[in-house]
Amino acid sequence: MNPRDNWPPTARGYFAIGAERSSKALNLGNLMRSAHAFGASFTFTIGASYQALEARADTSKGQFHLPHYNWPSRDELALPQGCSLVGIELTDDVIDLPSFRHPLRAAYLLGPEQGSISSELVAACDHVVRIPTTFCINVAMAGAIVMYDRVKCLARFAERPVTEGGPKAAVPRPVFGRGAGSA
Image 1 (cartoon, rainbow, N blue to C red):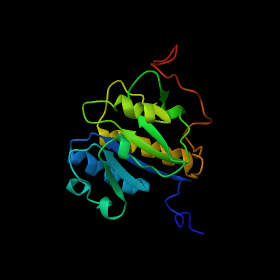
Image 2: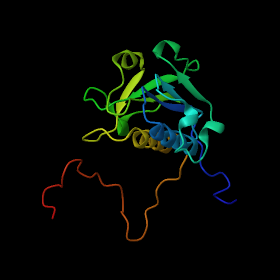
Image 3: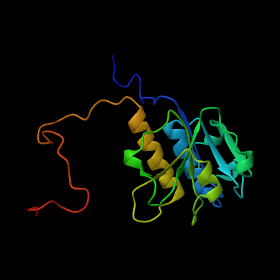
Image 4: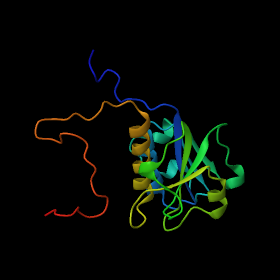
């Protein structure tokens, strides 16, 4: 059997990704293209100032392959039953993405360009997670990182091989800076 017959490995469960008060159609287009590539079930916006069809940066035409929902406000947000709302926010009092256990059914919510998720929506989130960066990154890039982490954690990939000249075993690396005696 060819290992690529079942490629790419599919993650268990389903997910969606969207943004609140997004004002740049280019960012939504890039986010929709990544969502399509990573296997999202749908995309969404809450309080966006434009429509999904204006997202011209999506060269994969994700809006024709994935449902997209434009909810005017938090009150209209209608996620499937059992779907966890997961806010992605750069704040200290939340869990770092590498330590987060993704729900099987999740809708990931990103904040607006040059802003944060509204306090009303943060309160509605089942989980709030941050990408461990020193400052905010582009909405579309943040979405791609979250989706990659989800697929990596929930899909069934083979273990990384130990190869000639490569690492002999998993060795913990210092998180910040180099260890004592390093060059």
